[in-house]
Image (tube, rainbow, N blue to C red; front, side, top):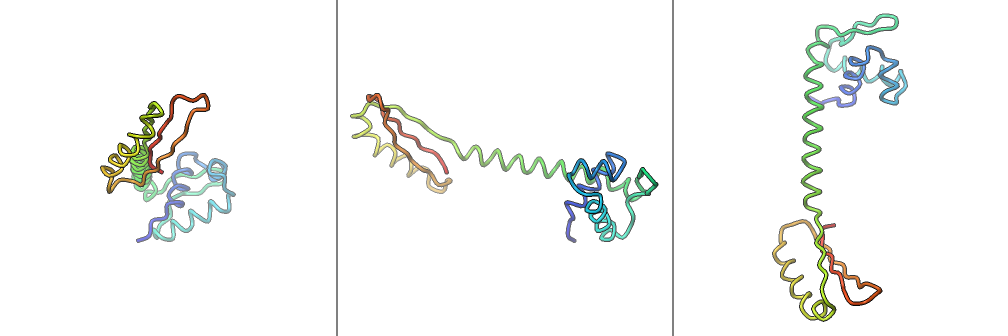
Length: 145
């Protein structure tokens, strides 16, 4: 079975706002596009989800059953996407080390090489070198791209 995510989103919006007009405005859709999404969802389920009146809609028995489950689906999806974003952000950490120029020139290449060797299997890393215009300190940046 194919899940119609846009149809479920439209369904939730209409149910929460009580009208196609308000839901269409909230979703930045035309009422025609919103009606099309709901029609597709109802056809795929084989049952109407709304009782339509002139200016208001209410849920059918099927709509009443579907609404809490559809909300839970979107909550779970949102949680899953947030977990993935956190994992990705945690993998994109940067390390900045300030050292004297003599240390930077003589010691840091081997320190960075050893650090890179321990990151095998991790996300790809980039290392950038920059020197302060005022002289004295050099900065090494190591982080994932």
